[in-house]
Length: 405
Image 1 (tube, rainbow, N blue to C red):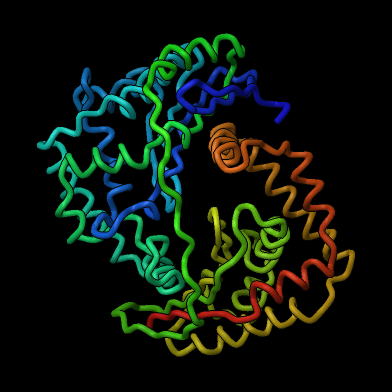
Image 2: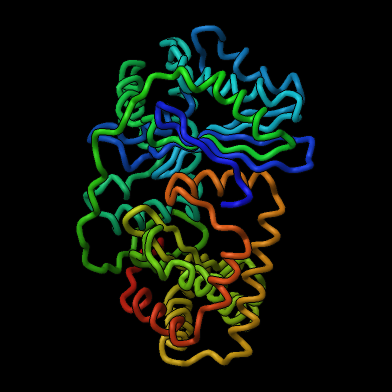
């Protein structure tokens, strides 16, 4: 945390800043509110709200919101996950205050005009229909819906046509009043600004925002039995996900699992699954292993697309690799190489100031702290072969399977 200046406003908004030599400034408000915070019949409202924030404020029309930074060569954007809503901006250092003011305006002074909301509803329904045409994306959401059955954590972030068609401006206001709580917000920035200048700007636009503290807590998903389900889809390929619940953001073994997932099916061409299924047998163009931690649980999954009649063969080969990880102690040399590769990937990703800023905002929101790169690297380097076997057995012991046939 030594690289970041931090303080908390009286309304509970936490603020962090890292000074760099770049003339480009990045900033974001990360809010601890996503699709898992939706009530029954609200499926998709977190994402709908993200869109609605850009549709007009007390002092700006939608066009003025969207063009404010673009006229200066910058940009304003946002995204929604199952646990966060993030509004972020990129500008020249000299325009930093304009970005902060705009983020404050849309988050705390949006009017959600009915006419604009109606237009955006059709756009989001088109987005939902487009997503349905992408089986490689759709299968992830259908898998998590089964994995977190009866929990909002399993719901599709976009919602569905029925729920989106119901939303009105009052529904959005109720959601923001309930979930966009000031004590669940972190404003983060990276750029060539002094701590004094950062604080003066942030105080000017955020300090007078009335406090709105959270009065609810998330319910942990109930246990579910493992499953093996095939769904008929009119797709050219067969698609398959094998996965299970995994460690939360606060679990001490999450870094070990992240290393294991990277070794198993990360982005590198030398991942175990890519070497076996793609390079050796030519069974798939795309195979990947992912780990997504949430505040109280997580998901570890393996996805591949292949010819319909090759799905079972691919599953057997994946299970063979998992068995190797669960039963064979990795050599010191191989583990050292895996660590070096993982650390290199992390270091390269942190070269992006925007990515680092977004990651820091989420870290501070979750832990009220930010590990320096050196601390993260030390955690990776301390992992032992025995710890890898323990995590492999804990996570990949019983796998659920969803396939499109």
